[in-house]
Amino acid sequence: EAPTKKVAVTGAAGAIGYAMLMRIASGQMFGPHVPVELQLLETEQGLKPLRGVAMEIKDGAFPLVRGIKQTADPNTGFGDADVAVLVGARPRGPGMERADLMSANAAIFAVQGKAINDAAKRDIRVLVVGNPANTNALVAAANAPDIDPAQFMAMTRLDQNRAMGQVAIKTGTPVRDVERVVIWGNHSSTQYPDLSNALVNGKPALDVINDTKWVREEFIPRVQKRGAEIIGARGASSATSAASAAIDHMHDLFVGSGDAWQSLAIRSDGSYGIDKDIWYSVPCRCPGDGVYERVLDIPPPDEYSAAMMDATRKELLEERDAVKHLLPAATGKQTST
Ligand code: NAI
Image (cartoon, rainbow, N blue to C red; front, side):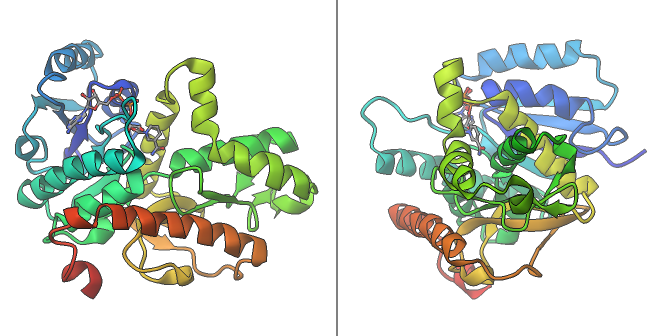
């Protein structure tokens, strides 16, 4: 039998947690032969509903589930974890400024980064879903000085999936035949969903679509603002699609997705001319076993793409500045590696 994966999930009693845990339990994250131990982390107030969620997982009678831990203590929650999905975050309250939200969340992710550093396996892979996801990943990594920051990722897979879905609809093709759609930058409305390298049935997507006005005036803004569109329709933020994207991200990272391109918000190493040390979404190949490799063999961006990539880069630099005072361990290792 494959070794058990210990999976820590924060915000486990929230909407995304609720939609994601059954799928982890059923083997969709690591494959149908990998047992899992769930380490569910919530706030003190969240522990009661979490108890109900844990009861439901037990009632699912999943053969792969080897244990369910429930805790409000980060060191316990991340103890010996192989994988962490950081979903729990402070939602934006009435009258709360973006900067306040940024600081409130940075505080949460600083604590969690420290706990991961102290308690988790050294080769843990961490996926940040809670917003502002890219900057929360930066904060968590900065507070985990003994763990390679490359092991911390933020999720832009939902944006990629949304973009692929829109291209599939526009071209009347199954989404399976849409490839190499890239999300650059921040998981926010400045992200750049890029079709420059995309293929539909193996042909350049931009030729198949043949409608620049649609790409720039409908497709890009729609993907950028899809979260708000879902809230408008559903009255609540996207949860089941976010959970599904987290499953996809981790599945491809651990099981592998061959030559396919997947967008991952990872610490910039200076590739593509992006400032080092911001968490910027780029295209990667995922060979499996927790490894990703940037796709570097692509033509340089045209003027339009370069401007789009730059706008989201600037936003990430501003976000980093907004949390600078909360990055105690940020100097040293972050800039020297
Ligand atoms: P939710 O409010 O339903 O659930 C969040 C849960 O996190 C709550 O149960 C809360 O008690 C818990 N929590 C808060 N602080 C915590 C802490 N310090 N430790 C442990 N648990 C904590 O929210 P939902 O819908 O599940 O969304 C969660 C986050 O995911 C939000 O920040 C949302 O903006 C973000 N999100 C990100 C997406 C992405 O593509 N990256 C897509 C959709 C949502």
